[in-house]
Image 1 (cartoon, one colour):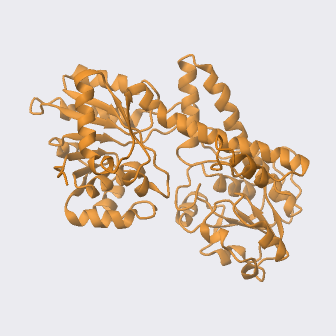
Image 2: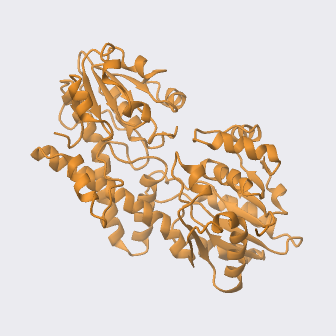
Image 3: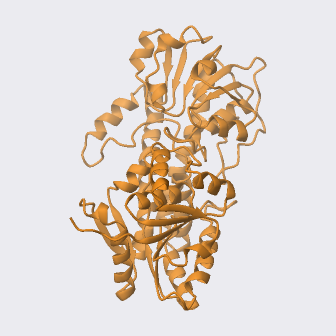
Length: 472
């Protein structure tokens, strides 16, 4: 077996992406330093504790921390002797715009430039993993070159799924290198080959391309997935209008190998820190480049996704006999992530008690960024409902961010006296729920499946009124 010597690596930005990447690189045998500016996050990581919920990450972090191959710091000066530097900082959406905010990327690059421009450093490789607008790598390469630093810049996009981040890092389905032409590209590829050697030796596909294509891969993939989700949600509207069954429809078209079954589950739509902001940033950048077709496609995809939240509030109100004024629920979260306006809402004089099951944007995560579940829960509360939310991982975050909601400590507590159970995040605990176990707790036997995840027959056979988008 070929022995690969460890590489000295820095990971700049230790949020969700960076922390998992740093620990995974240490797992592969490298010496890794994680850098971050958040003292609370650093304290947790230095103590071997994950600052967020991610299955398997606590175990991985504890394991590699014990080896001495991973440490964290708030000082960029400590990474001067590293050979390879990964940029893993966030690129949130700019307030008031669909564009990506690159201020964190630019700040990290400036700080790194100051280190790498030193005459004591002969050369280094910088690998960008942040999701950025196409053209960013070329601009950053020029910035490094103007400083006199001998930097080979690579763009190496991430493809992590929250809930599967450790697996996706250590066992990815592909690795993409965006390379400069000539010697700098060869040097960058060689550095990443060393870093990912154990993964590549297993036969993981590697795609070497140019900077622009590598930057486009992530946003193109997310745009396709978002389009697929909005497509099936649009089909669910047609099913509601005609009595069709969107689950049977999705299964029938998903058996076509050109389409496939994944991401064809109608419901409350997509959210989180990636898909919504990535498709908006991509549309904005493509429009700036004169490629107007991207916005022509993705703007309606975004609109259908927002409409899915509106339809969910309508469905919930109808299911419990709650009269809501026309148009009062058609205001989902804005592109900037603000909460809907409460203007024109007419709360019911005797508001229903509702149990919202799920607050994170997806299961196996505590991430509530642009979460459809949390957005719908807040809007129900704004309309006057007594909303009790239970999420297995995100409860403390919901308590901090949304004091207007009552956070339950268990599913049973949330269900007590509820006029409807509403599944908005498809945690396994909710999918496997036995209707008979909650029947004695609720005021009315109404189950609303906002994720097309529950077996309708089981609930209906138990005497429940079972509803969902596009479900007859």
